[in-house]
Image 1 (cartoon, rainbow, N blue to C red):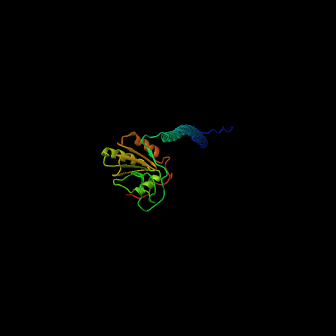
Image 2: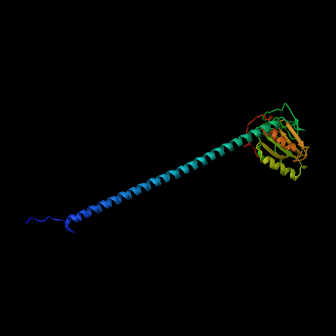
Image 3: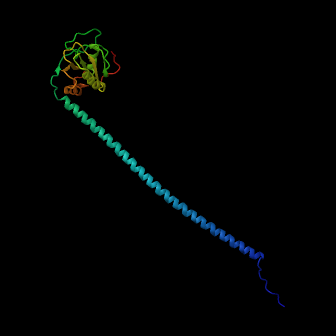
Length: 240
C-alpha cells in the first residue's frame, strides 16, 4: 500500500510557528498604528504650538506697537508743551509790565568791600565775587546786597519785602520762589514798598503778593533778557 500523506496536526511545531508569526504581524501592525497615532498627535501639537506662538507674537507685536506709539505720542506732547511754554515766555517778554523801572549803565566789577547802591534794594552795580545761592532759596533774614547783586547778574529774580507784608504775602511769595530756580527771597526792612521784585537793572514794587504783575515779572525776568551772564550757575554760592 502506498504511504498516506503527512498532515500537520494541532499542536505541531509548524502550527505553533504560524501562530507566532501571526502574533508578530499583529504586534507590528499595532506598533505601526500607535506610531502613526503618535505622529498625528505630534503634528497636531506642533500646529497648536505654532498657532499659540503666532497669537502670542502677534499680541506682543501689537502691545509693542501700542507702547511705541504711546511713547511717541507722549514725546510729541512733551515737545508741544515745551514749545507752547517757550512761546508764552517769548510773548510775555514782549509785553511791558506796568510800573517796572529800568536802570542802565550799571557797573559789574568784583569787589570785596561794601558798595553804596543807587537803588534800595539794589538792582545792579559792583558786587562781591561770590553770588548768593539762588535756586529757589528763601532766606528768613536780610542778606548781603553785594552777594544778591551777583545772583541777579546770573539772571536771578530777587524778591524782597518789609514789615508791611502780611503772613499770607510772605507764604505766597515763598511758595513761588521755592519752585522757581534762579530766584531767591529775603526780608529787606529798609525798602519803601511792601514787596519789591528785583532783576538786573529792573525793579517793580507791589502792595500784595496777589498782584498779577508778580507772576508776569517772574515769567519775563527769571533768566530773562536783562541777564548779564546767561547760563551762569545759581548753585553752590554763599548761604546767608
